[in-house]
Amino acid sequence: MSERTSYTPGTPSWVDMGSPDPTASAAFYGGLFGWTVDFDARPEAGGYAMASLRGKSVAGLGPSQNPGMPPFWSVYVTVTNADAALEAAAAAGATVVMPAMDVLDAGRMGVLQDPVGSFVSLWQPNAHIGSEIVGEPGTFVWNELATTDIAAASDFYTTVFGWGLDETQSDEARAFTVGGDMVCGAHTAGDGEFPAWSIWFAVEDCDASTAKAVELGATVMMSPNDMDFGRGAVVADPQGAVFGMAVVTDGST
Image (tube, rainbow, N blue to C red; front, side, top):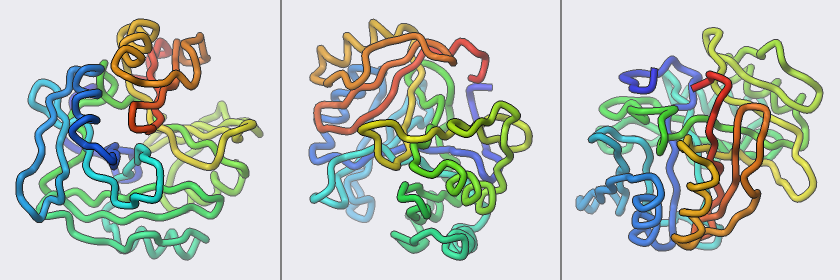
């Protein structure tokens, strides 16, 4: 099912990014994925914008909150209670980077850094459930953790979010489940990788989308190639935020 009206707690449900030039980022992603990007004019919104397809929210972007850090995409995991989830995460060895806070009437969020060093956000929904379309071209289809200690990371996320482990797990790669459904994965970071969650967007044609991204100012980090799940590529947008694009052929969408 690509259109969503709710998410089971523990499911990655939203992605957004902070950009040093949100207007330029909106133009890039609008040109690449066909997003309509609407900036919230209310002062209390802080310049945040919702990107949509068919009038349904699919991602967010806004100004960088940490000017000293390079822009990056963030993944949000739905939780029933953000305060309790942060408390459980801290007890499991995480660092609370941003305590739980209300985001207007949209919901309540917090940010943590897992014990191995990766950042992840929590989302307690109110008016905003997260992405209203997933798995379709132009929407996020997968989130993947690169980590230097896959066993410790697995222990942490299964404890805090109640994730199950898919039977395909190995010493180098894991797939996590919620209610029996595969929702995200993890692998041991390779040379040049650092602990972080990555965001993957679905596309109809990986090669054509990569060429389009380059035309719009992106830099190719990993050229299109055939992977276990389908054909994928990784690019950095003109502001430096890295993301993946994939044609998923294994039915996981």
